[in-house]
Image (cartoon, rainbow, N blue to C red; front, side, top):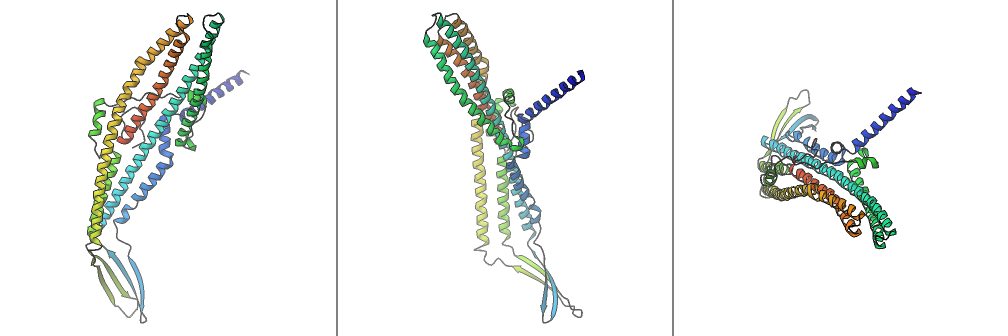
Length: 418
């Protein structure tokens, strides 16, 4: 009997451990980012597009396939082989243009990874904020029930009016409505997270796990001055969006060189030999393709390529300007939100809790009225709810900044992105 109890105890322990491990797997931010980067269809599609352009590089360095033919003329049969050729520079620049296109697609893949990382982080912090807001509203409701009971007991002895008791019940009704709305918001946030994770990595809806979800306030890993100056010292070497535009400019330059090579004549070499045993006739020929209509064809192709270069350069300049503006705005927002969160943690919430505790004691002793107590209770709960809202917005600004910059500046998970 004792052995059976030990066996069932060990089995139960491991079952709980496995359940906990599965919860942690489903609602772990770092693991979820890695899973999304490995399995999300948007990543797979971007990778396929990049690989498709990459494998086209090598063929462009080679000429077209040769042609082999058979010919019969006046009962005389012969075979021939021919090869079309261009000047070597054309093959080089065709491959170079395709290589630059593939590199720009590779940067697009990195940009997509950064965007999905941001979406996972925001889905987690959105869910965290909704869960905490719901907890605080439920706690406020429970506390209000206690206050209502105190008001009822004091009314029976004539210490307070019936209006205090009615106000307490009215506030409870309002809170019930707020709780229903908060539950809907939490369900929507969870659905958003599950949409990003996909069916194969779906987050559990277990309430214990959601209640246990804890996300830390991200820490900035660079100095405030560095954060402010990043936007004014952007380099196309490090930032994926600028690198992609740089590759597109190089591709456009290569395409212009290809267009210029069309002024040079392509040529075709051919060799022909008789199949007759008593006939050893051989023919060797070379044909040139003369760009006779260069004023209508080749010149316009060069002009079009030149305009594409200008367009790519201007697009790169525009992307850089927008990026500088966006990063400057986000840097200011990050620093402001960081100070606001510190203010909540060190001043506003502690002072609110202290005021509420004093108001509760004073109300029980009859030194303050019900309205003063209710206002103090509402204030401290609203402060806590606002803190989690500010935390979500702070994290959103950081993840957006990192997504645009292409590198980490905080303690948020960044493994597997680059």
